[in-house]
Amino acid sequence: MSRDDLAWKSALELATLIREKQVSPVEVTETVLARIDASAERLNAYCLVSPDTALTAAREAEIVVMKGEPLGLLHGVPVSVKDVIFTRALRTTGGSRLFAEMVPDQDAVAVARLRAAGAVVLGKTNTSEFGHKALTDNPLFGATRNPWNVELTPGGSSGGAAAAVAADLGPIALGTDGGGSIRIPAAFCGIVGFKPSYGRVPQSPGFPGWEGLSHTGPITRTVRDAALALDVLAGADDRDRESLPSESVPYREASEDDVKGLHVAWTPDLGYASVDPRVRQLCEDAAAEFESLRCYVEVVNPAWDDPEDAFVTLLAAQFHAAWSDRLPHAYKVMDRTLIKFLERGAAVSSREYFAARARADAIWQDVAAFLARFDLLLTPTVAVPPFPLGSRPPRQIDGRDVSVLGWMPFTFPFNLTGQPACSVPAGWTDDGLPVGLQIVGRRHADRVVLAAAAAFEAARPWSDRHPA
Image 1 (cartoon, rainbow, N blue to C red):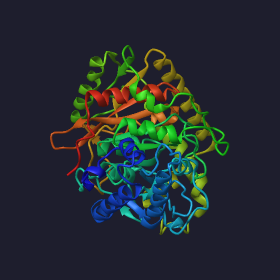
Image 2: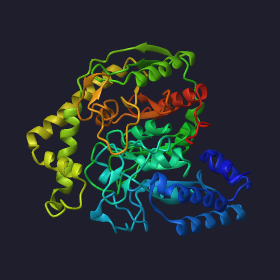
Image 3: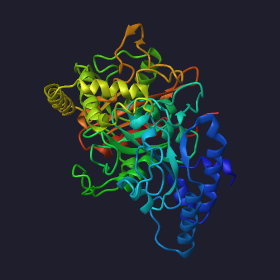
Image 4: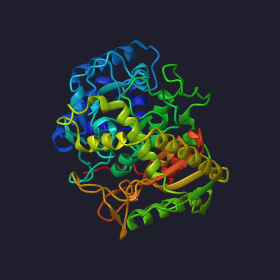
């Protein structure tokens, strides 16, 4: 098997090959490390690579295989970790000069579970500073580029993670999603991004500011890899009192579940969004595919109000509470957009904050009532295709002026509600740019979302399509 063939294997395939002793964890790790090194200058997906640590872990994994000892689900499989997630003995900066030399003394729960499952941690992937925006650049490490066109953004804030998976610099990347930060870059990079139910994967320990909004989850090339990763990551931990108990049936079995008879709602705009015609057409066509899967598909207009103000108010206030003590001496080292965000948070009164909380509760009531009629809701993941690196997100879409978050109107509402949501490739534009379809489930219905995503992947496979 050539190194190129090995590099494009899924995590599930690699775990099987390693278990059957057809390839060694060291061979796999060396292959991926070589690809990371070759792409570093062009993509800037990783902000830290630790070859010595990774190869040591790979050698230890190989010894376990040769001894015939029990193996974890991801034994010997290379993974990456977003740089806002704490990693023991590996530098974790949050993309900030304030923490340029910080080395945590413990892993985040999710990272500890990856290691316990036998995964080989390669290093850390790039992010915006503390993940505060849905792009991937920061004053410490610069910008990450999109593997499909290096002149374009990969989205964010888990853009380094998504670019790494799309370019096969590791089959599983661990990301975070506080407003779309897993799903947006997955859509822009033509891969799978799964935001589990809130609390499905414990959050502790980590950087503050995202309380009540952030989800940790996998970015992969296949739905089955996402389900496999969730089997490792999910389950309660007392360090996060909002974490959910484990479920009795493995998530990877959901990939085989029949979706026949599911009631599916499709909306191109949620009743308020402006959408690029190319995105709308591809996602509309993808939604129609669910009829061939013997689902009942209905075009809907939920008629919800745009929750952008409530979302931004909550997040800005929480970020100000978390980081304002660093000002004003941090003005020279922080991302200018983060400083503006903190200043906005300073202007939020307690009354406005709790009004936004109440608005989020009202949004949940609307969504819950809507999904009492439907098993799934389909939307575009992002309203536009990937746009030029270094430019501001579009403020006009399909001839209409849009708000600051108007280019990503479909993701952050479901951080306010905490539901599971997955982005899968809906297709590619005529000029070869990926577009994502978002699949949203009922509260805690992670298995149904994974089943629907896997069925769609089987109908319209994408994993054999790679960036040049």
